[in-house]
Length: 342
View (cartoon, rainbow, N blue to C red):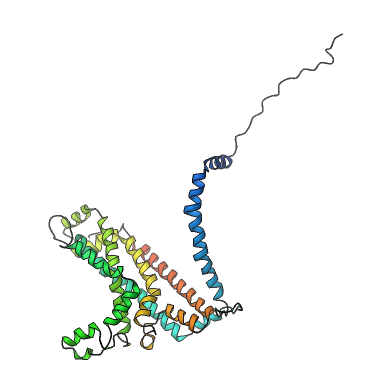
């Protein structure tokens, strides 16, 4: 009997074309294969942990402060209600806070400018201000001046403020003692920090004294990074020290100057430690009062934490505005590409 009718012939299936996985899937596969325990632990320790700490201790309190600034929170109770922009209207129409804003704005304009100019001048003397012939070098004893100038910054700001408060003391201060000894009898009991005309300049002097040395060292490091051949070429072209400093040194370290200016502006918009050490009550007619001092008084003496948070938000906005102005001026005025001896 033939079995042909019942048998069936199975043919191999025709090969089907398999399309390659998309590029995104291939990248994802390689990424998953490259995720080893060492890499994951590295990300967690050096990225995840700092980010978590930053969010916990910086971003979260900032958001809370902004939210509290729209409430009447007293700081010592759990009950508070929204008040909208009432706190901002209150502080911006308050004469005392307006005076504090003006003082901080004045500090932010004057103090960084003086510190930057003095620091650049001293850094230039220490690095390239030596003999006008031979090897490019600084003045004699540059290393000694570099070390000595850094001492004021090494002192805590509160110690600096207390020390100068004693030096400017009207009755037993060193300044009045020296001036009186030189024959200036008008300064026998002169209140440097108690006179409306001298209180703010005196505080500015103390802040400048405390920061010039640090930024001088910062600019010295930046100037040391400029090739000596550039200064030698400028010398051959007949450029003097001042011309070299303005046309070569400053443009080449412009980014360092910008960074220093922003940090100094942030310090000046705060200036709490120096102001509190020199004049805890804000000086005569609030001539040295800062926003941070008024914030402290409003929060803890008056129990108006909502208003104090609004003051903090204003301080933060002033800081951002200051940084934006510095960046804009630096961008508009040019940078390293604008080096010329013409």
